[in-house]
Length: 286
Image (cartoon, rainbow, N blue to C red; front, side, top):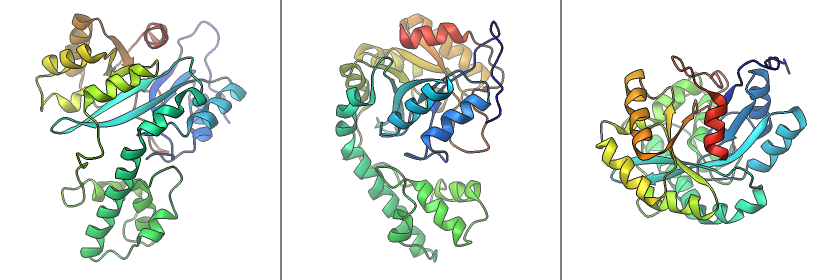
């Protein structure tokens, strides 16, 4: 690993929204922590979609190389459209969060069924892939769309993972989440709180065209929301300013995360954002 950590007294690097291959990322939990180390990022949160199964490996690797790993999760919720709620569990061990994994089992099964539906649509359109091939690429507790991408690339249907993801996110194959296996945003917030966590609204810039964001955040705050992911590459500079004002109005802390997934993504870097890392970490841990 190439060490790029800051000297004592320099600014800390943070990234509180990181995915691994136990959900739809491309690095193992250990590799994600090593990427943080190589990038000069001192504190990360592992926030895989609908599972906490990668936390033990990530936290152990963090202890070994000196990266502070905050245990987390990103819950798929739905309220007319997709809403993601981040949960941070500072001070908790993976064993403390076994109930979170149990709670999310229905959602995990639903994610696999969604992937199978995408395979069926691809088969209808002439793509030669099977459930067995896709399942063989699965690395976590459910089969994510990344596994489809791996097969598409390996069989030459697409040139790389970027093209494969773009295909699956097109209107033909972007199968909506079934309401039977997703929770409401309020339920996600309440569940996170019940396990001693802090719930944060993820990349809210994506929601600002769908909702009155002030009213939406207010309802979540009533349910126990503690923070907003203000500093995200998915939020424009103007949106960040508006979201920061909303956070202040509701007494919510602000977080910073890149939604890191892919090998070629920068960890800990949100363009146009200069933040006080210590203040953000205090909000999550305080």
